[in-house]
Length: 202
Image 1 (cartoon, one colour):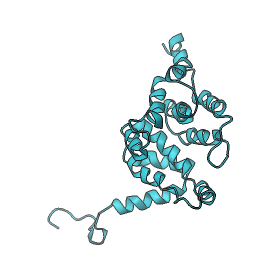
Image 2 (cartoon, one colour):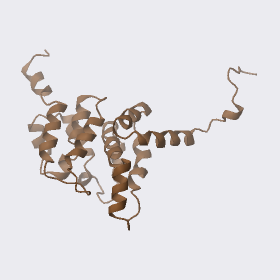
Image 3 (cartoon, one colour):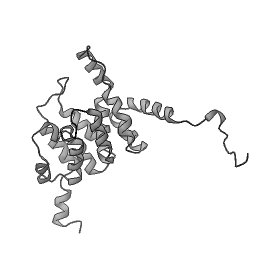
Image 4 (tube, one colour):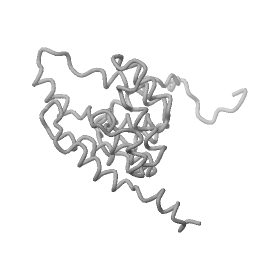
């Protein structure tokens, strides 16, 4: 069965194919800092290397519905797995019920585990210290980028701790420190009075 034509067709669109498509689709685009936008989408896909192919494909193509004329049907016709296309649509801002409300969109994304993983990678790359600093220098009259920070707890609550760590370690290790600090804050164990090995009635 694995060698049937149907199976081959279903599995012929690989993360490597998605990487090439992302490079081509975003080739002429620039980000807010006038840097090649394809660097961002490739970094997001690379950050998901520890996950399955459908999630990795969605990572490379996460902005393709937002920033190019590519439609859902066109992606499916190219062989992009339906699960990947569903994730791409879930993380596409203009398809949210309220596209102008950033945190509302984040909450919609967080209702789906796989989409939350892709958005965590996207958020982490957008939050690289040098990028945040460069944005602050370019627009000194604007407050520092806080929307990404506000989004993280919502996204993190949708997935497992180890999944978050895998993504952050690959794309933005600086965020691991923030993540650990938040875990410490959320831990209400009274370590001062904790007695190891104490049995019932001790």
